[in-house]
Length: 105
Image (cartoon, rainbow, N blue to C red; front, side):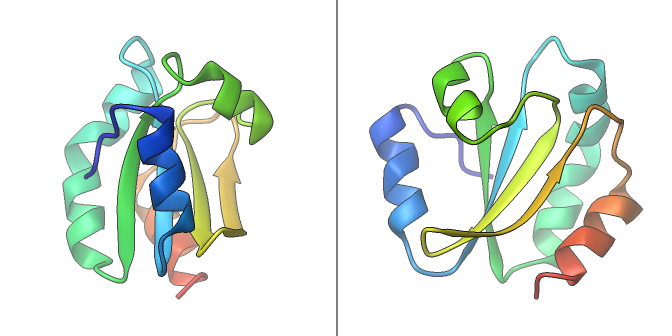
């Protein structure tokens, strides 16, 4: 899981070839903490995706531009085009995320 240190670094991932999963999260978010233990498994099971963890609080302006208000949320881009989004305020299970990603392969 890549954790960018600047908006410029995030922008560089947006422009890269391939499919990227931007995982918007925050340390205080209980549902985000629930996800954390199985994110490495999801990442290992989906090598065709690059996973990028975005601290929603550190990049609030980006979250607003991308219409990400509920966390945890996943926004998937291929090159610089959005191809999928799993955004809501509900807790997400490993099975739900796996099924969401399977639909984007």
